[in-house]
Length: 255
Image (cartoon, rainbow, N blue to C red; front, side):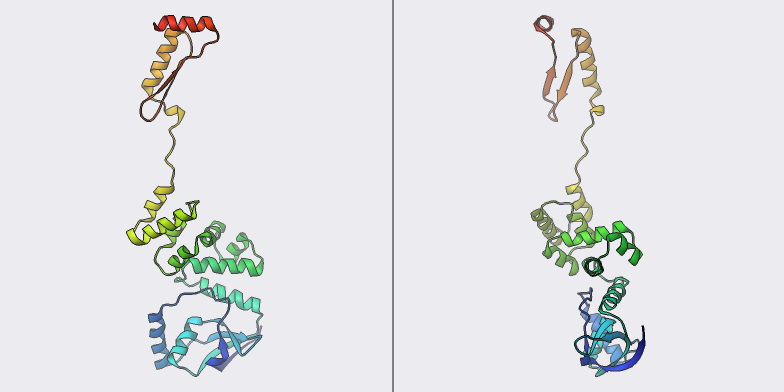
């Protein structure tokens, strides 16, 4: 792979089509543009010869955008001799290493690696130095409705909220609670509590008083007695019998 540092007319450079970063803070871009206008672009961008026209950006899109705002006619660029696939990989990796990439952009970047490189979740995890569950859980965010994904991209709801919404199997519920998060400020914990089933009472947790009654009835009647209570303290008593004689004996003892 060869590299060459040259000055390139800014209009001869096109953006990388595989740029995973979709959101750029306009104020930060304008601040950087003012710095570039005053001091020049100190760190060169990285490009490759385009298969169609001029040069294709590999890395440094933020600097490239700010240079256009600053009105630079030319920018310093390192020209790399790499393939379109290598360009895509470098663009994705460079952006994934940035701390301000939002969760949806991150998920889309991982999906690009999977689609273009035919990689598994495990392979992406090793490539990016992440755990496989982290990659898989991040990719699951792409299963959310488009409007919720946009809300994450715009910062209206957090990645934590989005992950909690995935627990709702119904899209209508996901959209309903996404609206509640934005309008009512519901926390991640509140959303998780809505979808976490309450633990069922174990048979072993049967009321001690009920168990004692069952034993007393069994001793008195000479057969097994089962008491089943509902949550409203109603229920029924079961007295199994094998034949008509046993039934008559139970009736006589109860009357």
